Length: 338
Image (cartoon, rainbow, N blue to C red):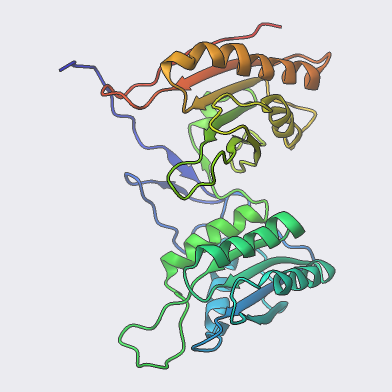
């Protein structure tokens, strides 16, 4: 066995709006005394919707009044101007063929955009990947509407026929609030060390490719490349770009375009990142040279085109290798001095 020297780092402090919360190993508590670092905001006339999807057979719509009320209390405690008096409720009943839900969703989200409804809570009838996928495709891809899905559960020791209940435990509502705040453009918390170790704006970029696997995949199905990056020095938001590419091709084919998309999302365009740190995952040791020749060159070209005559950032490329017995990262660093 190979002995290696390691060290244990102290857990970082999480900075919320008022108190500083020291996290325990891997967990922390969102109490009532905590406000998000930057709460997301609703417009003066914007609304929240609650859409309940009812199954074709079985019980009707679950009771949502208490859930919406309790969630609103949590949102306000965390600093979000949740529009309690502007919450609409709608239902969609699935047909016998539950796959035929696209038209109903399309009609609903067209109304959502017309009414300037900024956020929609979706109550699903059960854990169902197909229904969830149709909801997200209609809301996110076709209409650009922010949604959050929840699933009601039968009450404990409940009698047959009792209405389904949505979890209103504080820990569950706090978890929903974290997600909603990000979707509204807010920042949940910051890491205390960032102020010490980030003297200039830094963009952190993650790159990976997912390949079709298993017998359920369509033959020659495309691989999917993804690029994710923070859009400000706070690291509170991480928009992503995705592209399909040739079947089981590991090198990212449209990397330069996606890097430019991430740079365009940087909120303060007058102070673009002065350093870019790229984490590349999923490549074997035999592919390191390909990453340098095919991907690093695309990153360089994208930066050159986007920054033009401005001061170009320094780039650090880190290739992370995980599948080995010694848990370390193989780090290849390339600093570009323009």
